[in-house]
Length: 111
Length: 113
Image 1 (spheres, chains in turn red, orange):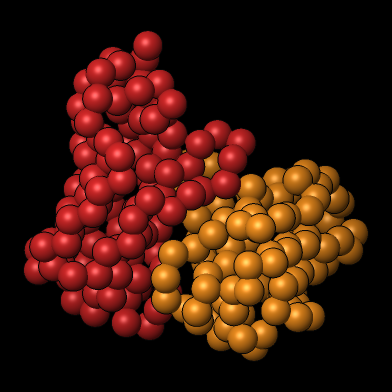
Image 2: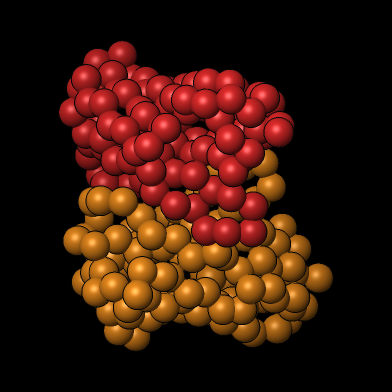
């Protein structure tokens, strides 16, 4: 059973600040790491899927890195905007293809 | 169409009722999932259908019964539920089998009285 941990649980930043969160997962039997953004009253939306050690992906002001050897991924948001306020979920897929989610990081960006 | 549609959005049922949650996608995805999420907890996998066959059942109690009538539809039949089954039930799909990103619906909020 994969144990996926995310930190911090919640985060308040000011508009324009840059921020980052962490996702840690067991490095054995690793297959892929997913990041999702979940806005209130909407559906979770995929941001990134990463598989290779050292992977870096970017979408606009958001980027993510992956270290499969030590079992962690960072999500970075540059110049946070109020519309970035959401819960950011990471999920790890093991060799059995099951996707296990962390509890998420709740980001609030104050104008 | 890039949506996963779940109905109903909200459902209140008694412990003796029989009800169903429905999920539909028209993206041609071949894997569909049910997740359960309780407050302040991560989404927990319940069932996965791949190419219309049940691939994963996470030891879910038999009062939850999944059904995949065709590649676009996924149902979750509910019977004799307990109050602790109250949660948000999320449906998702993915393109090819069990790998790749998930596309989620907005969820069905279930309350069991």
